[in-house]
Amino acid sequence: MSLGQIFITALLYTLIGMGTVFCVLIFISICIWLLGKAFGPKKPAAQAAAAAAAVTAAEPEEPEGIRPEVVAAIMAAIHQQLKDEEGVEEGDYIVRNVRRATWRHTS
Image (tube, rainbow, N blue to C red; front, side):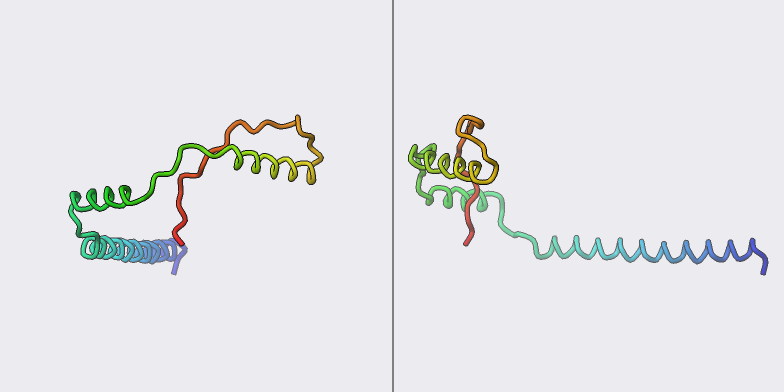
C-alpha cells in the first residue's frame, strides 16, 4: 500500500466516523426536543398569568427601603470587619447604597 492510498483510507475513515457522530448527535437533539414538546407545560397563557397574579396578590406587602436600625447594624459590622482585617479607619470608606435583595429563599 502506498502512502497516498493510506492517506485516502485514513481520510475516509475519519469522514465516516465524524459523520456517524454528527448524525447521532442530531438524532439525540431531535429526541430531546420531542420530549420537551410532549412533556412540556400544558397550561395556556391565560391560566399561567392568572396563577402568577394570585401568587403576587397572596404575598404580603413589604415596606419600601430598609429601617435605619438595620442600616446602622450593617455599617457597624462592615466597619468592624474592615478595621480588624485591613486596618481601615472610619473615614477611609463610604457606603453609598444599602438596599433589600429582590430574590426569595425557596426553603
